[in-house]
Image 1 (tube, each protein chain N blue to C red):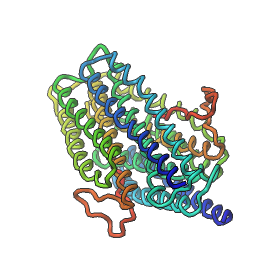
Image 2 (image 1 turned 60 degrees about the horizontal axis):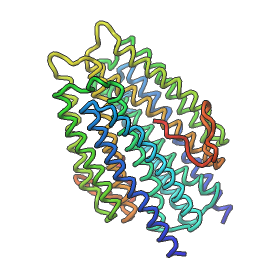
Image 3 (image 1 turned 30 degrees about the horizontal axis):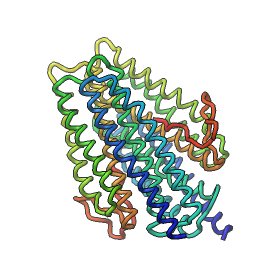
Length: 232
Length: 232
């Protein structure tokens, strides 16, 4: 029974790990479509998102079947519950990449961004793809020690997002209001994409260790029970 | 054992049901703080959010303990897994209300919105609070038949959000770009708040019936297994 369970759990983990690269590809291509006003690529990102949703639904069904048939406990139970949450987060990352692509499609053939903002979004897109890459890494080799690096890197992304908004608001002459709306939403999509990556890594670390991982700049709560407040 | 389980499950459901009114109060007060530039109320919404996060964490721990100690199956298992998801959604609704309040605080003593947009946000806030109220109703009396109404009402909220963005972009003379950024983000916060309410209702209906609820304007998938794509 335990052997069958661990074989099933390994399959579930492999299914989750296979979703990671799809999220990374989605945000990388969405950024490229955004920066190059590439309609074909934007359409490809939008179409590909259904596969992430379907895989997430299959992972959730698989995890549910494991709970129903094998009644895992302790670390095994934490891993299965984590799988349900992580599948949802990865699907959400795909949704957010799709939103970026949808904006590129809506403004096509015009570019969404003026050039001096586009170069900042190139960096934002790279940071988001790197966050997704760290999720891939954590899913491939869960060590319980992936959160701290992910959390620190997220500070850089948040800082860049604030810089972009400051540049947007401080421009003289001012940008058209449509640019303000598009930049605010795009920056939010990237921020939320990275937030899902942070939460995924924290969820995985917790599943492996049974302890909420400490943030790099915050000590762990004394009783080790209360989670770090969600990154949002 | 089963009797103890059902007593524990009833407690878990009561804990979840107690979170619903907190989310409704949060978005109602955040809207009032936004429209009246009320700093004290904005601070109150921001402070109160920690309680929703703590309650969500306790619900998740409680649900985990139920899985570990009682190994539920079938409907019971679906209800426990749904509780884990729903606690997270309700906490997220609180986060989004907090974001609205934080923007009111940041701009204080200035109002965030010009009057002709403020009156549209009053309606958006009411629709969001009503969506949260339907979540309260569904949590208090899970019938498996709450999704359709919630989903239809969400279309009205999405329509209003689009109207607001059209009004923002069409204004002559144009609004300052700061207004564009604030309105785009605020509209997104309300939209996402309502999306969480829709997902919560769908998750609860599924837990009760074992079938993914059909959207009002879309037939249920033939095999009844695949979930409706997430509302985002």
